[in-house]
Image 1 (tube, rainbow, N blue to C red):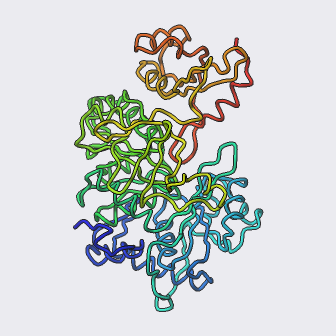
Image 2: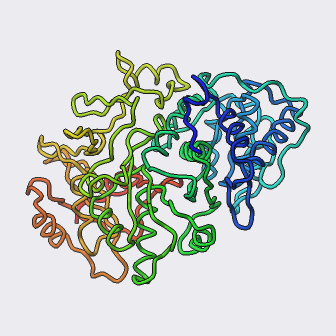
Amino acid sequence: MNETPHSLGSAPTLWDLVDRRARLTPDRPVLLQDDRTLTFGELRDRSERVAAGLYGLGVRPGTVVAWQLPTRVETVLLSFALARLGAVQSPVIPFYRDREVGFALRESKAEYFAVPGVWRGHDHTEMARRLGARGVFEAYDDLPDGDPVVLPAPPADGTSVRWIYWTSGTTSDPKGVLHTDRSLIAGGSCLAHALRLTADDVGSIAFPYAHIGGLDYTVMLLLYGFPAALFEHFALPDALDGYRRHGVTVAGGSTAFYSMFLTEQRKRPDTKVVPTLRLLAGGGAPKPPELYHAIVREMGVQLTHGYGMTEVPMITMGDPEDTPANLAATEGRPPEGMEIRIVDGEVRLRGEAVCRGYLDPGQSAAAFDEEGFLRTGDLGHLTRSGHLVLTGRRKDVIIRKGENISAKEIEDLLATHPSVADAAVIGLPDVERGELVCAVVEQRPGSAPLTLPAVAGHLRAEGLSVHKLPERLEIMEALPRNDTLRKVLKYKLRERFAAVPES
């Protein structure tokens, strides 16, 4: 049985979803990790016991609790225990270190901080103490425990700010994004509806659960009653055993995840890499159209890509039953209730899934226009059928001799070159031209070394205008990426190659 937010009242909380699903299908699995299985009934009951343990530590409704934990069953339990209490949660990506973590703790004024202890060679407990964090406790294997009889009533509505997520920091400090249960439920509900998932599916969470996509994905599980396999560390081919063992039908995360699955498929073209897999889905980074066609052709699965951000977890999503042309070249359509307005080429948003703003009131004032639309900084347009096409970000527009050049257009065409595994296009300062176009490329293993004339010839053959051709080519073994959805960090490329003179 599929639930909808509307069937739970006008402003349901996340705990409402947990309790309702536990009553509907208590014995169905919800979380699968290695040899462990947690049912919907166990999720509710164990979360209440953890909530009681946290209550015994002094956590109350409205208490700010930061947590920096990997993708594990215990992390989900802790998060829903905090939701049961009505605490304010501040999830922190587990790969972040002193600068980002210290900033998040200070800005959120966290009164408690849950850490994994020593995880992947880093002592998070020692770092927390070094940063002067308050209420530090470890929550990797063991969680606080208590008798739920001590608990106050669950939170009554989902419209209060109870989540502080953090945008990925680049050259500046991250922003604290304010969400409510209602905004996160709206995002997860629309995602599940767009993907046409059912109770027979098995999903997967292979990215950090502290990313806004972690909770967004879990909302799908609660509404539609299907399980997901959790991966504490995602690396292929090592993780393939988990996908096969749990019979995952829906996988993904972002463009980099799709490419990694495709690489594994190419090692054994005649054997399906995950026999049960029928759909790759995700977002978080641009998707070259050629990657869509390669996935469908070589893996024999559908690929639906969407558009989301920390401020708005679900903006648009591809429909598995849409046309190949739309699935390859657009980000899908917005769900009911998501308004998209294009102003001077910029995508602006208004709707239930949009955040309440930022911790910094000044940032909030700058982010929303006079009609309450969020300025995304992304550039795009809507087709006649209502599909969104993204053409890049404002900062990714290269201005060469006064002409605007879209980095994404060049990147999409580079992706069609047989020797290119991935590519990023950046603008670099140039005295004569203002900016020059620089293509930074990862080559496919075993391919002949690329040259600038060869790349330019390929782009010309694909129809790229002469004034948009790269004037510089850089080859890297691996493009720099963040640790959440593996998004390319273009600021690092600009820093590296702006200081290197043309040869």
